[in-house]
Structures are given as C-alpha cells and as structure tokens.
Image 1: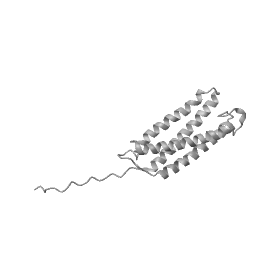
Image 2: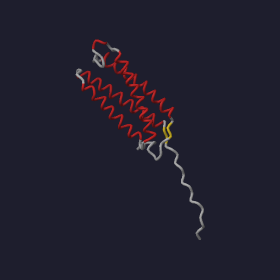
Image 3: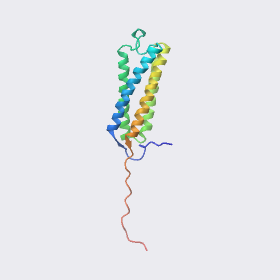
Image 4: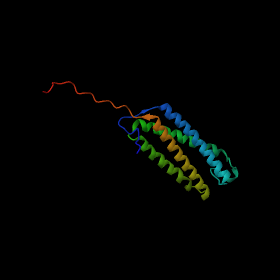
Amino acid sequence: MTSDPTSRSGPPVVDAGRLWAGGVATAVIGALIAVVGIVLIRGVFDIPILAPEGEGTWGDAGTGWYAAGAALAALAATALVHVLLLTTPQPLRFFSWVIGLATVIGVVAPFTSNADLDAEVATAGLNLVLGVAIGTLVSSVARSASRPARRRRPEPPPPGPAAY
C-alpha cells in the first residue's frame, strides 16, 4: 500500500516551480487530448460534437475553445492542488474527490442538452478521458513536487540530578 507522502503532520515542502511546470505540461496534454478527441469523433466516427455537423472534422472555433477549456481546467487543478498541499491534511485525497466529482459533472452535463444521443455520448466520453488524464497527471506531479516537512527530533531532557 502506497501512502500519501503529504499526509504526515505539518505542511509539506512544495517545489512550486516543479508543480507548475507539471501543471503547464498537463495543460498542453489536455488541450491535445481535446483536439485529438474531436478529430477522432468528428473525422472518423462522423459524430457532431461541439459544433453542427456541417462544420467538418475540425469544426469551428468550438474546437479551439474546447482545447483552451481543457488547458484551463488543468491549470485550475494545479492551483487547487497547490492550495490543498499547503493547507489541508491528506491533500491528495481531497484533490481526488474534487477532480472525481468535477469529472462526473463533465460526463453528465452533455446529457442535459437537446443533442442527439450519439453526440451526447461522444462528448461525455471525451470529458471522461480529459478528467481522468488531468486528475492523474496533476496528482502525480503534486506527489513528485512535494515532500513531507522535516520532523524535529525531540529535545533531550535537561540534565537533572543524577539518581543513584
């Protein structure tokens, strides 16, 4: 069983540069996942997603906005995990819950539209892949960018009268 290295007493030491570099890398990956997913869904399966069917494989500006939204979600996740690392006990456990619930919202939201079922399922699937990718990547970056705070060794008791 692997324990959360940041769950020990005291706030962990966080390498913010490493954390945010990983967050930016995750943002790029999230944007690329969105573009690849849209090209695959529209181009290969010919399912409309984010734009009307007549927009073609690349769609309209919706593709760029979706990719930008994925990148922004990754940066927001990085900000959230940074705050949690500095302020909460077991920060990665809380982070997992927040990301999990946000992913559920992203998966369920397409089904509230009036789109065709195939478009709703495709969009929900893409949102699921994005949520899992962002959650796992940011969690692993947070784990590698933090270490437990040094524990102080207890002070030896002051010298007292020797007992005979």
